[in-house]
Length: 292
Length: 234
Image 1: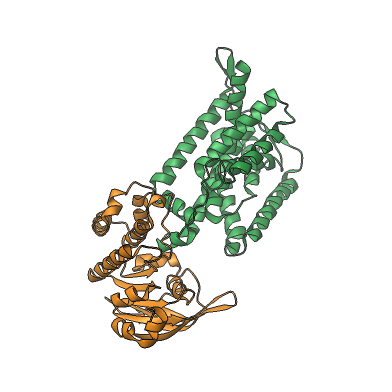
Image 2 (image 1 turned 180 degrees about the vertical axis):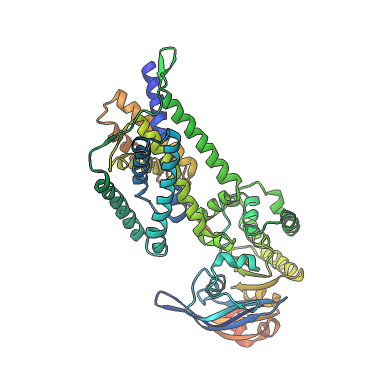
């Protein structure tokens, strides 16, 4: 019983981090129909920014987090402006390949700058784990869950109640018609990249607090998992990315405990295949209706 | 109000619009009629800046808007009801109308216009909390028109408002277009339903494979032999 409970909590923990990253994939896809493969590497850049500011510059943990957010947002905006914007009217495959190229560029730039040797991420929080009966929950887990919940509520409030948020939903439903409303879609796209990158930076920080190793390719796996989470929930749909991420995190951690830790990724992919077989648009995706 | 000067438009290697020239004066209803694929929608999309023209010029209130991006035209008084209505299906009726007023700041003016839209289309008021995608085709057309009106346009361009609607609804929609025009909005109407479009219009242009082949008063064209044969079933 305790094993099950603690695995569920672990699942929510990794699921939270996947969710923060998955939101960036899904929001960008929602508007420009691009799988931004460089998004996973934003995590890596965020993690390096945090580790350098913390260790080499001796900044406080909060300052390091802010630095990571700022660097990731600027990087996300730059990538969009330099790599994707010129291809806005090209076939989608061009921007997809460009995204893969940007990802490789970031990884190799990090390799060149920082070397292949992983850097340890320092302990920024020393709090005893909390006990609930026989259950032990680390403070980092609680913090991750809390921060993620707060960010998701804020994001939902933003896209449903604010004017730029509504414009973002309008642009994601119909890019051309949004322009006919007077919405500057270029600004909306920049805003989307900025929000996605900021969430990824926070996700990166929470990720290295739990798995304290920073390396040039560290973003690939969480990036891939988050992408799967986004597809699982229905790509382009914000609550879908959240749901997909939690389903995936819990499945992964249950598989680790009850099946085998080597097989956990296989289980994740199997679930993805099953969902896509029976509901190709993802868990929360609606079949694309005729617009006549 | 609007002057289109010898514009040419290409989609890939297809020459969609050939030296199209026409104008719309303040207060008028002008119709562009023609068969499917004649280039009617392309003209509207060229004016609103969604597709770039290869040559020629477009003047709106005396100023060239050829290079003005689509989103800047709304605050200058140009609104378009796109073909196929294109309401934001997952957003509520109210949110769709809010998007129509996206460029405006004055809350009281927006509220007045919302009342005006609900006066024209009482059904939208009943359904204001519903997702736009759940509305019927006619209601979606009303929403698309209401949404465009929310920008308080000087010139309203409408692309096939009758498409896919039952005849009774079509005349209802055209009545409302007439009313909107009487309240001071200039209208450029693109239609396949030539009968309705010509009866409503002050002036009209007939488009064939990317060229204007005839122009005249709505009533004159309605009586024109060739037009009757080609578009009005004899």
